[in-house]
Image (cartoon, rainbow, N blue to C red):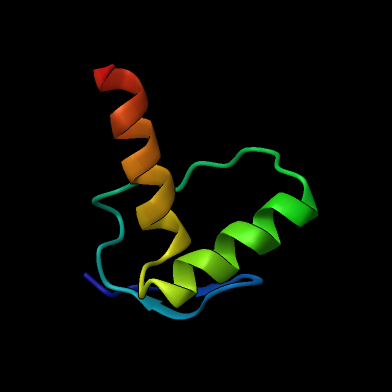
Length: 61
């Protein structure tokens, strides 16, 4: 299986895990998006990692 190419605001490259984890979308303000992306990068994380962790915490509480 050939990896899919992506080209979004925060990611340009190959996503080798496709199609194991399907893409989802949601609306978010630009200010919140930029702040979250900046903080995630400063922590060495992707925004996907941050959202996944937050959702895991949300459903487990």
